[in-house]
Length: 158
Length: 170
Image (spheres, each protein chain N blue to C red):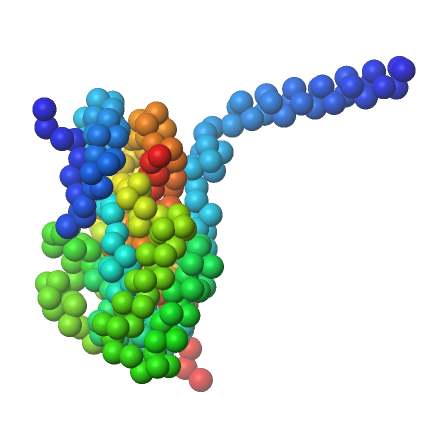
């Protein structure tokens, strides 16, 4: 039986939630005859640290992050490493260490660091299809949220 | 005792009316509790993306100086909330301004407000339309991945003001 989901680019679906995704995608397909597109899945600490390095290096801050405490801790690691004139790979390593310590304590700067989150394309769904998707999602996932920016569905699993 | 009973009846009636009212409301994303708290955040980094001007008039060109490296994708949110997808990877020519390698190396992006068209989505259908058509604040949003939360992707953003009228000469 074919899968009723595809992934955007190189997005990886965490192994532990593949079967739940399949259940949701199959239910959505049954009511709409359409497949879903996974736009984001598992994020590694390394890629998160690299993205934050570029953002901070270009003058960006953490004011728009939900997990303020965790984001500020990573920013501090960046600032401290810069003050010590460390090189880029070493600065990223310091930031990654903070992210790993946070994850160990089940604190996540991004929910995608948890291996329990997925984003699903919303823009190509009609209002009726969105409703069908939410129904399928709520029957399986722990949380089904509409997030921005731009809008997409964020799914959180147990 | 009578007063207490009357109070109870009034309260019961209020609960009943509220319950009926809620039942009649169509289910929206807000009422079904699916909207995240990040949804309506106004985000913008004033210093990262640099513009020739942040106040634009009909026919003006926007020139955006981009740092390198910069995020891979670009969208603009119009004042009425429509998202225009200008450059999205893996979506084909209809959502790309140029080949992705060229965009990745781009240091300056020039956009003509009078001509710029891009893809947007209306009730699940892909449409194409003019980006700058109404007066108001436009969010310029760049991210490595437009379709995820901003805390899950490298992102830069800024807000510009567009006036859908010709600039008056002093």
